Image (cartoon, rainbow, N blue to C red; front, side, top):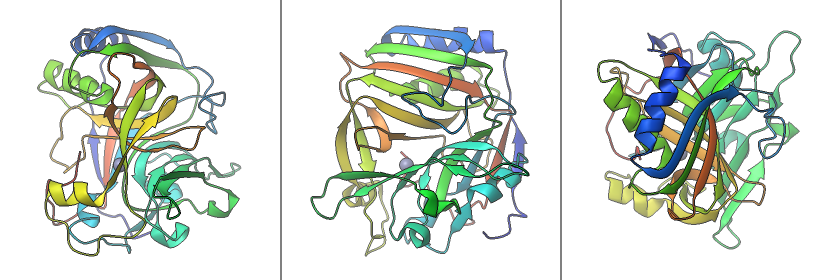
Length: 319
Ligand code: ZN
């Protein structure tokens, strides 16, 4: 991993959880027929359907935006390789549990793919547990191929970009979001983000966590295994390069969202999902608003760390 002497740190606004619940519930009710937000004890995330390597998403929550889309387009930078253990140190939480959305290291996996990180990073007396998934396009049939990280990927490398939530992986109080029947145009994540942006208009908040699409289907994309043959310059170019799929519940989604960018050139929301039936990738929105049901657990982050921010940037391909 390249030296990250340039990592920027920004302190975020963290409202009381009870206040956040009220704000989110009111906001979500504009986008969902039924929305209930409350403070609960984090369920044991080592259990189904999560099967995470840790029990909870609590303890010193923070987020990081590593690399960025400018390292993928217009021209891919396969030399941009990062490591979850190093990232844990960059975010000042060695041994952190990390979840989120990113890209595989094409060097480690042998191809470009969507990465669903779920990693308990190394620390004194703590073994690495890499419970990540990655989703690629199956060359045999052009369909989605989701695979689980096996022991051979203990090195925990990833590539190009990632939006990550890091914490101590402890049990504790979290914000539970239940939402059913979408009546607005926004995804669950976008709806939460816009709600925070509107309510806390002079502040910067971020949240991370996991949610399950319990019923319905969702639109996702998966990047091809090979990097683009020609430079991609517009959102239309990017859309034509990506492969889009409709995948079915239950889907377990890892998300990071930021209410507003404090000038760090962030991707303000990014969500990757996995399933136990072989489908996974980059989540946009459910495609079954009348029947969709969401159940999620989130926490506000205390800090954001910007790691290896691209010098040359653009706004293409950040949806
Ligand atoms: Zn993605």
